Image (cartoon, rainbow, N blue to C red; front, side, top):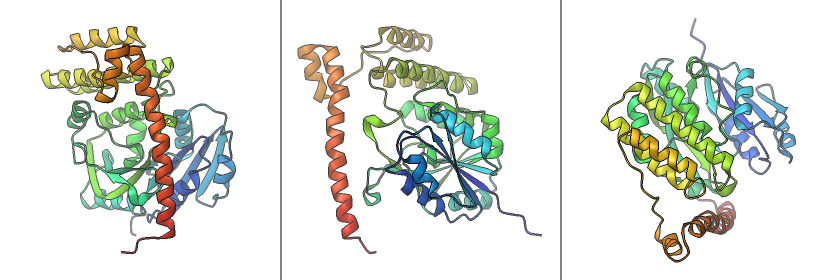
Length: 343
């Protein structure tokens, strides 16, 4: 008897996502991999997210709700309800190409990847129109060992978007639950643990993910929140510990120091305590942190009025720019719908 194809669980945490969750669910339903279940966990939304999601309920799409506890708790709840042999994480505003899961599973089967292989794929930014999605390859877009993946992430300050991964249940259970302690970068910390439990990453270029840009409303936005700054620094410390648990040599320590330097801008000058701790950690790694460099757009403010005002401008100005970009992209997406391109 032919072996049954693996079941894939598509797990979607949702909070106040009424404007985009319909598109996300359609992209999940449209997956060409037939053996799938879709589980939506509404994390106490105060808008119509739950009502919209329930319009899509079916034999293979389940919607549950809980009081607001954060995205990590919603993901843990979704996993506890799942039965899949593979896990596809998907945020409520992102999209999967129709062949995303099929491409990754077929690639894994044809190349003899074991259950501890971590499957990734290409991803691109978009706002409203998929036709305008930007796919920009990084040093992570290839097959890599866990050690080399983490080194490149820290050396180049790059990442893989959450939905790119397809993870076996065995590997998911080995990594443990999502951390509910981290208000930001919980995905970065989580997939460090997945990587450590894996045999390495297998990159599948034919699969694609669309990552919706949301500006300052994104969960990853730090701004001037003390709690988020503290959570981010905790995540940085965990990243460094994970990498050094694999190997501890000059390149590893230099990569860890680079990560701290890249991230210092999130803490300077509002949190001198965290800055001091980061500097001390860099010294222990054999490096030295310098004052974060501002782009020319804000450097003149720093010279004329000081760092605090320059930092505030660095936080506020992108919000206004982002509002303008969203408006333009929305208008262009409406034009695209009225005049679709035919290949």
